[in-house]
Amino acid sequence: VEGFAGTDLASVLSSIGHQHTVLSFEPSLDAMRAQDDEDIAAPTERTAMVWMVEDEETWNQLFQAGQAFMALAQDSVQFGEEQGFSGYRLMTEAVEGGLFLGKGYLVLAVGEGVVEQTLSILNNPPAGKDALRNSELYARAAELLQLKPGLSFQLTDGKRQARFLYQI
Image (tube, rainbow, N blue to C red; front, side, top):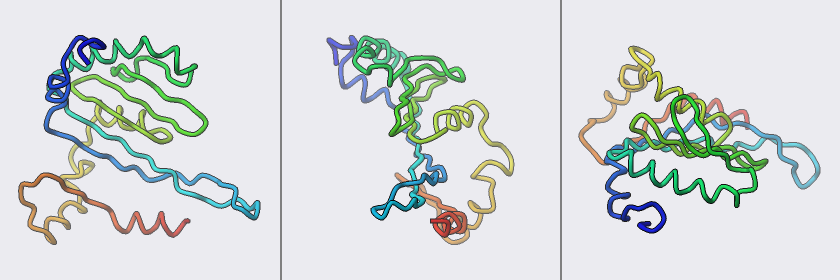
């Protein structure tokens, strides 16, 4: 890492911070060709991982060093600016996504529209009743579980997930 970006691995790993968030968006249903040549709907995962970085400059150095390898990507990866973040956009027939840095966050997004949606959420966080912490879903979870400090939490809207699965 030192020769590549001018920083050591320990600095890179410690700069990623302590807050890591995984966002799972409703999967998209894409038509797939079944063995009998009939189209079927298959879910495509749409996920983002967001880290609140403690040393954005370290990641900036890595991003700048990575630009030298863009010629190898044959136009499927482009470096650019989006919504105040800078990073790499992956656009292939098989997958859409990106790795972006800005405003104290490192974002890895995979799936149709996930980059745009995640960066927009970071730029304009939900407030009031629109925020998960203030939602009926969160209040119901708090009634069912004793929410204590922990390493990891997952909250899923089961009704919404069941509606989606019913479509398949």
